Structure formats: structure tokens, C-alpha cells
Length: 120
Image 1 (tube, rainbow, N blue to C red):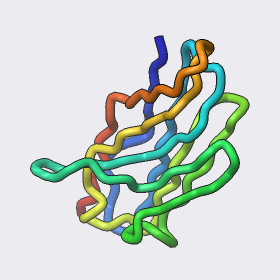
Image 2 (image 1 turned 120 degrees about the vertical axis):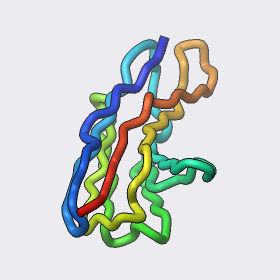
Image 3 (image 1 turned 30 degrees about the vertical axis):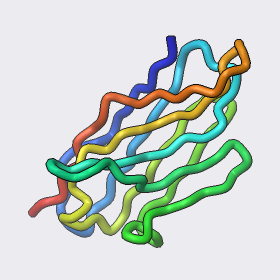
Image 4 (image 1 turned 90 degrees about the vertical axis):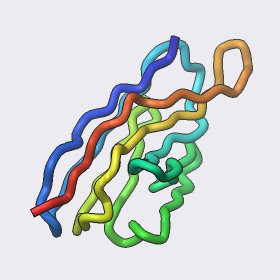
């Protein structure tokens, strides 16, 4: 059983910062990629930032220059540093991991989500 545990969401004023963390545990041979997605009511879940085990990162245009994704491959963790937050960043943020199982299969898992609210 593989699970992701997220932490770090909350309420912050516009212009403020938050740091989200996500830790993967369970029967994981190796992590291929981890990322952060977000979703607001009535909208599809969208990719915010992602990183691969090789160090390649990608960001949504709306967060470039404000958010930074980082990972610790040895500990199967990923973090999202969010600066200069805007009200439109308000959403439930989900962590996702794509990993290789000990059986040689590629699988994926989602975290439970953490609420980020940007409001004065």
C-alpha cells in the first residue's frame, strides 16, 4: 500500500507565502515523478508544478516565477514553495506520485488534498 501525506495548507493574505510538503510511503521501488495539482469547485484538476527523478521541472504559466517545486529523492518527498500568493491561487492542492513498484509496474497515487486560501 502506497500513500501520500500532505501538509502545509492554510489561510494566507495576498502577497504572502506558504510551503506545502508531501511524503510518500509504502511499497515503492522508486519514484519517477512527483507533482502538485490544484482544483477549485466546478473546475478540472490542473497541474501546478511537477518534477521528475532526473530533475526536470515544469510549471503552470500562472505560477512561474512565484512557485518553486523541490524534491528529495532519497526520502520520497516533494515540496512546493508558494510566494506572492494571489486570491486566484485559492484551491485544494493535491500531491501526486508516479512510481515503480517492486513488481516492475508503473503506478500512481494521489494525496488527500490540502486547502490553500488566499484572502485578506
